[in-house]
Amino acid sequence: MSGLFVTLEGGDGSGKSTQAALLERWLVDAGHTVLRTREPGGTAFGEEVREIVLHSRGFITPRAEALLYAADRAQHIATKVRPALERGEVVIQDRYIDSSVAYQGSGRVLGPDEIRAVSEWATEGLSPDLTVLIDLDETAARARLDGDQKRFDRLEAEKDDFHRRVRASFLAIAEAEPARFLVVDGALPPEVIAESVRARVEALLG
Ligand code: TYD
Image (cartoon, rainbow, N blue to C red; front, side, top):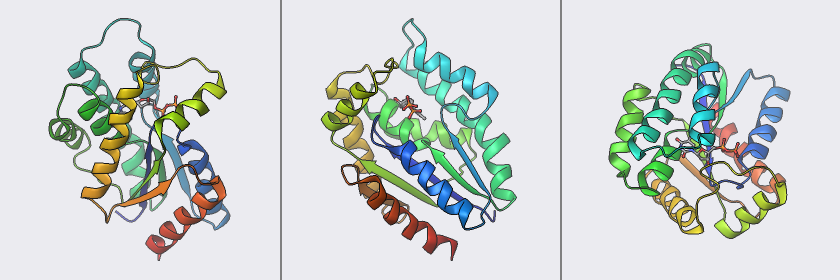
């Protein structure tokens, strides 16, 4: 595959969407074709799954939840992301397998290895070239979300302790795979973060 696959990870309110938008603009200005997308969502099927996993009122068992994210991912990677990479495009994706490992694998009762295995099966093992982890203290992240005044989804409504475990899990994944990761401090100004992301992407584009 000739394209470049960049994923953004981090807790809710860490600033991923801002960085995805800044990176997209910079790449497009430099003449690249970019697919900016997200999970859950990114396909019509995925948007329906997103509505269920984020806003369903009833209790969803951890295994059912994990499979819903994996189903969204299978559809998204097969129908949108792989074709774009095969065309040589740069894919900027908000959340991927690491989110499942952090949220479903460590935040809840299932183990990180089994969660990763399910998603790797779903995606036939597609791994990002670069994953940017925007690390932010969960209290600061929560303050940003409160400022937005939007309705909290099921995950955002979880207790602080859950978000602390998610953050620790992301950092552990990054530590285990340093070559794939760029870890940035989410408390830094967006432009400073964007600059370090651009430097890594530039190096990968050659
Ligand atoms: P996100 O789209 O980043 O939320 P928002 O657009 O509201 O900022 O992610 C939605 C939520 O889904 C987020 O709380 C994390 C969660 N999530 C998982 O639990 N597992 C996953 O595999 C993915 C992709 C997301």
